[in-house]
Length: 384
Length: 84
Image (cartoon, chains in turn brown, orange):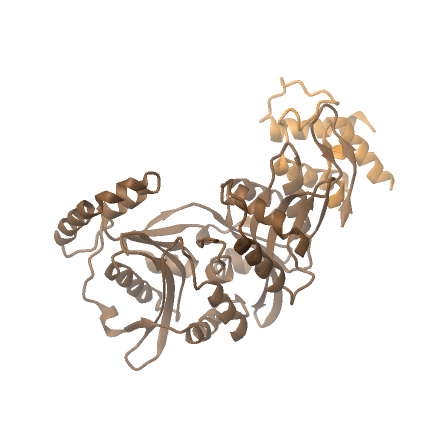
């Protein structure tokens, strides 16, 4: 723990703050910060959220006691900042490396603690891990990471978006601000039916399920056990990748089982007719809505056809669009699939090891999704 | 602490937080926080600069307004660090 004392001349702040590890007694305060600063709501944090923060950032990470979430504590003992850290065991060219996944980053307003965020981030990045990363960095925290000489990974930082039904998509996008617009759903579906009948070719504006190689594959729901096993298999193709043992992976899939804000979970494996698995995907979506993909994985060279299966499935379920986060191998495979690419948040990495940095900047690392924060309930779930 | 140190700090602040605008008044006792010249992002840039330019190590606990809110305080902080 570190501490210091100061009084600002003519200022409202009194600094006698410290940074220390997140403890059970901090859960309530951190949950309130989460509600107020990240969920942007004045409602008090629920017991469900508090229990989840404890489960995720204390119980789940108990095996790595020196890579911990951190809190910034004011002089009066109140919590003014939090960085949620999930330790990730990884492998790089045959040797184990430790990573810190620094996802949830919330700091109170600058008037009360002008340097709280800076101290928290510095503290976390100076930890014992070989590398640190975040996949959902907003513009403010991106600037802070940059100041710490971290590297933004552009090929991992884009959102891909495939519009499937244009009128429904436009309606859904607008309904995010004015939900009453959803009453126009039947009208939009009618317009989509006309647009999608117009041609046989794929277009950026709409999706038409066409006969193709995907017809030769079996695209079916996967149990957590099978899905976990295949994730562990597919991830080994990357020079730098997480080492998930089966129980950890199944625990993560239990976390990911529910994302009430994003819709029903679709967890599929794509196989040849002889039963050989060539890929998998996991997304959430509801009829008429925009699906959110957590993960697409495939055997090397099979990414494009697995993406075809994903889009076909999303279309068959009545989604108006499907989106997800890019990874370099997916980005390559998405060329020609009429996707739009947008930037919403950044994947950023920090390491003092040039070999690890090179692996990440060259796209030889498996980051984001199940290796990032996508599997937690903090993204996309409702806390009752 | 020498004027050279203060000038180096002032130049860094002008270049990085004032976009090179040398007409902005920047007395040595001006609060960088109260005048919105520096925030959590800026402080990390400043700390990186101090570590590199003055060959000092800044601990997390050192990152407080008492050490870094004015040019005068920063210069004093550097002097203490170098003397330690």
